[in-house]
Image 1 (spheres, one colour):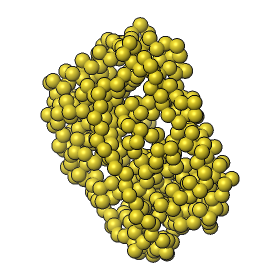
Image 2: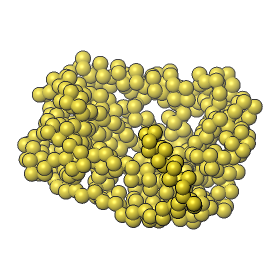
Image 3: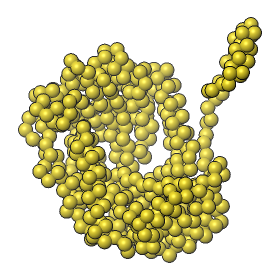
Image 4: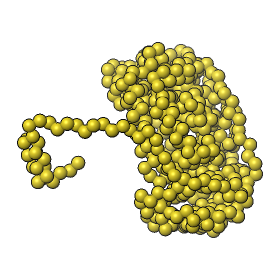
Length: 477
């Protein structure tokens, strides 16, 4: 807060004249419910539409989700969903390259997209008077993208994706860690076992016809949900949605991949990387975001790492000063999840010792459960983060789409929020004991030639990359 000089003098004078300190304002109870008004309907071609009016600012978000991600790909043909995230911005049948940006960024808005294991989305944030333009842009690439996709355009985007992989994974310090962990946790045929960006060998051999077939199956109205959130009038928007999307043909029926449960025993891996400092990763298979345990697992990660009072952070970074950084994370997809702990040592401390310390902290939490103070802190922090995500039009669109696509209910966030508020210390203790078991992957990322730095190096299996960059090979000890 900034005070002018005269206001500062007045505030000081008032405080000096007061004989006693003013009472702090009474705490107000947190809101017990949150709500986003919306209307949901479906066009005859299967396109699901969600409209949510918010007149706070003269802007609107147009957000399209396709229920397709990397898990819909096949072994040996990975990276297609993510590749379309790039191809979708190169123009379509009636939208030459560059026009999409001119009708969004050129008028003060923005556009982007993202790909996960489960869905691909494309969105525009635009001034309210450009909602029709945004709908037209999205309908054109839904219905007419292949009209402009030729071999040259495809190969250019494939090169960009390959370079993105080199920068973000292959040549990034510790960049391969999560791919190696996943390869150790899941069988090769499991639909969550390969990376969203795809393997380099699969990207290299992909053809333009391969990706066109992928597009025809998954990028149809019947596999898409459109959300419009912000300052608009529903009547004209409904007319525009029918006008631009209504004639697009329904897609073929889609067979969703089966996601079998995975049982594993402890696997210990070591990977030599171009790094100066080793790092420890411990990962467990858990559950997808549709599980009732997901909120408790999220809170468990907050109890273990984060602020200096979090258990692993406090013990290893501040009390023992044996670790430079620590982290505990959940990674929940639609139908699969993982729980991870990472530790980077300070000089003079080994990964073996740090693993033992982290294990003892987790064991104590499993035995005793969290304290009341810990529960109050993590629940309040998660509530604040949850509600803060609803501040923007795009944030509202994303949470409505998450509920609609994964749970057939845009209002599912209310269920999620209620679960969050109802998590107890007993729930935290239960999920810690249920999921953080001996069935896990322990990965040591070590400097080149330093496999002896691995946690329990004599029990660790060396990981290498196949010559074509397509797989991780578990070699000899």
